[in-house]
Length: 574
Image 1 (tube, one colour):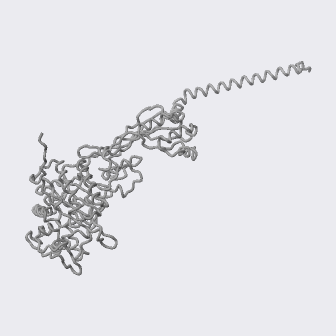
Image 2 (cartoon, one colour; image 1 turned 60 degrees about the vertical axis):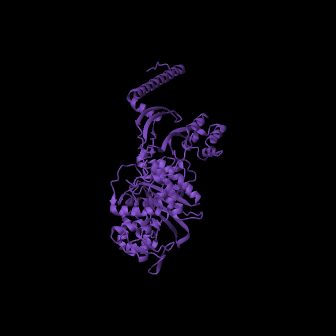
Image 3 (cartoon, helix red, strand yellow; image 1 turned 30 degrees about the vertical axis):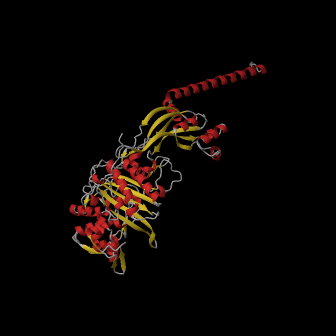
């Protein structure tokens, strides 16, 4: 059979081209179909998923700082407040492209060493976040913003400010750079003050900069305002008088505590040297530690009124009993001495003259356990429960290990120790007719934790005896208070070392109350190592008591009960 099909080369070329064209057309149609299907999938099926993914790359959730609660005194005067500030941070990956002169200008504004930021960038340019200045004031932040440096960002925070500086520094303490309490009330009441941070959604641009707030997720909850029992007027008065006393007596340090005799509120607690919590460069724990709460010392003769009260309460002595002191008293192989030979003294004059021999004789008439129980009831060796962080308990030797000489020395304040606050608290048992108060750093009306230690009759009797200490024949004539009756007791205590007691270093102490018939305030003054030629409590600490007590009673508008002793004010006639 003959094949009539054209087998020429031209015909074959035409057929090949037609086949390729069909293939290209089919391929294009398939691609178009795939693109249409993909478009439908993206625009319809996966629309919500893709929208969410896009938002995730642009929308971010950030924390919103909470306002830290204020600390105020009993009258609402601010002791610690938070002010809005800004922190400066950088993205080193972005900032490396900034102009060197801009970086140098920023370093100068933020008081950074020249080249410091450049060093940070070179050390690790892969980092995307690095704080370079925390809590700068708004004006400084604006100056840095004006440089318009790429990779420099700002974050709103709060900075703690203490209006009274060193006056209340030891009480309020301070916070760290993250606004967390580190000392004092700031640390002790951290949970109440700190508040709860909130959060919000924001939109960021491609460089992670916040360009718009979207919505609030959770509002920040501000911390609570903390109202202290401190009266800033009395705090300032005590601060200035203590400062003068430490300076005049060339002393190592000093402490003053003022208590409300009616309910145990702490109205003032100051220390010298003080510190300013607003400027904390190279701050050491030994500087900001509140010694009124945390440091202990042997109270010396300031505990003698308790020995007298215990002996009277237990019926071991009578107010009219006489004690032959004669300057020296042998107790076993040891000797108790007085500064002078006072001869025979009644109970009142044992306190007036501060006779170690007299109270030793009283102590030896009482069982060791009875005296120990009295001290323990008064709070020695036990925390006051003020809530202040690091508060000292003090120590007291177990009565089962007391020798007769231990019992004697315990009666004039050696062998036990406590803080200035503990000593002030113990005096509430004499000031409030035998009732020992708890102490409080927070404002309150009443004390629900009172404990009776002495009868009202005993407490009143001892208060009247203590009033003679402030007379010319007593050891604290310098403690008398113009316009008011006052009572108290001096203490001049040798400082203990690992080798025994020193002969040249002393604590000068005075504890007292006023007015005598209806005490309103208790004040304890302790001066550590006075070295300006005098060291007795009656000469060093008693004058501080006098000035602080007189001023504080007037601040509280307590009516004078001895107007004849008030200073005469002369006015010029016009």
